[in-house]
Length: 71
Image (cartoon, rainbow, N blue to C red; front, side, top):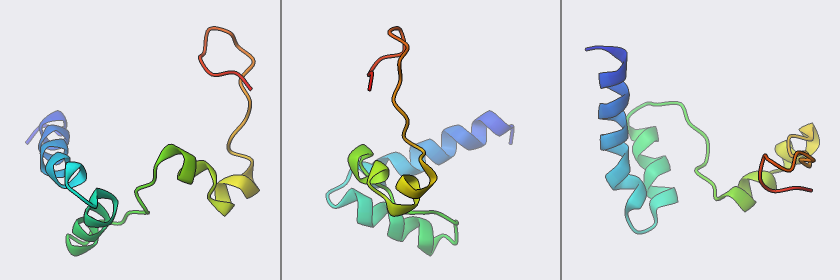
């Protein structure tokens, strides 16, 4: 199976799970059941509030007016 076909199949398999009620937990559970390494599925605000993200300084203000949100 070509690489893009694998990605398409993975997206199709995950899309139903991730759109379901309690999708964050259900998605994490399904990935774990399948033996796929993964981390938590977070909303953007929860991802940037993660202690490791804060410690690493991963969120940086953007000063480019054409790039979107500016800090």
